[in-house]
Amino acid sequence: MSVIEGELRDQLRKWVDSGYDDKFLLPQLKAGVAKLWLYHHKEIENGRDELNALIVKSVEVQGYVWNVRSICNSCFERYRLENMDVCTDCLVTYCYRCIGGIKMAANGKCYCGGEFY
Ligand SMILES: [Zn+2]
Ligand SMILES: [Zn+2]
Image (tube, rainbow, N blue to C red; front, side):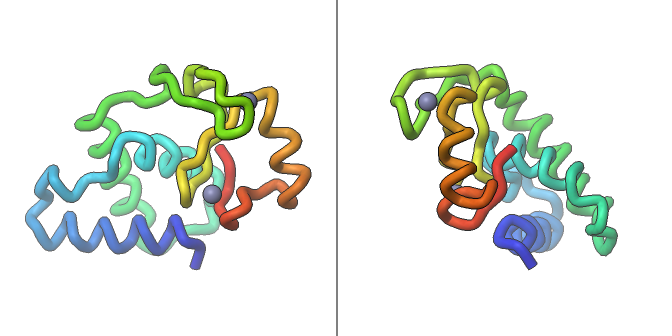
């Protein structure tokens, strides 16, 4: 199981056990990237609807993240997240100019092993 999948399943368990308390929802950036991750991993069928429910509710409560600005970890310029790639695991952000070099250096993945979306 990937790191992000384990993390989402843990969080889902806490959320359900708490009676769907908002304090166990995903943080804003994690929720945004988790949504893309789940969409691209159709092979995940076990508990998919429940994982999706956690993500959808998190996005609803925390707000849409992609128009928020973040700093590129390579050139240190600020960009809107919709123009950046975010790692599923460590949440590092790179701008559209820098991501190519990072991906090439790490087989399309983040140095931590996470996936970029
Ligand atoms: Zn950059
Ligand atoms: Zn990473």
